[in-house]
Image 1: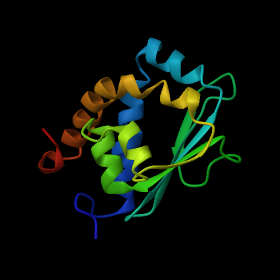
Image 2: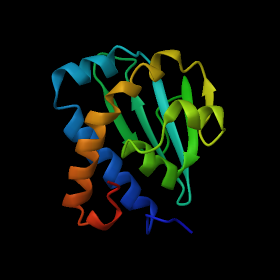
Image 3: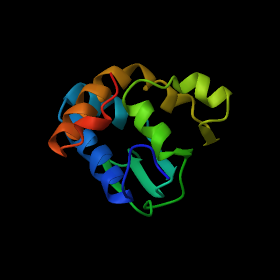
Length: 138
């Protein structure tokens, strides 16, 4: 049972809404586009897959089956994803402790870790819009 989520749709709505807000900033969008990767987040409990595809001319993202084989996969619980997007879970430590399991060469992707502060602000705004203030981590 998830500590924060009722279902996979909530997880998708929160994260994709955060991406919508974040990628309105041209400088952040350009950093994501520069990855030239298909990054897939596989979350469990509830099970949901979120992906970001920066291999083409236009940045794309969504939930469900990714458009191709991932360059990098990050496997973690939906609760730990919530903590990560809230900037309350240290990504590097979590990888070392196997709370986050990486598949593929994540060197370029991990360069985005410093953006977590900005992502956290947009993530919390999205949670407020979803009337999920009770799960915002301070």
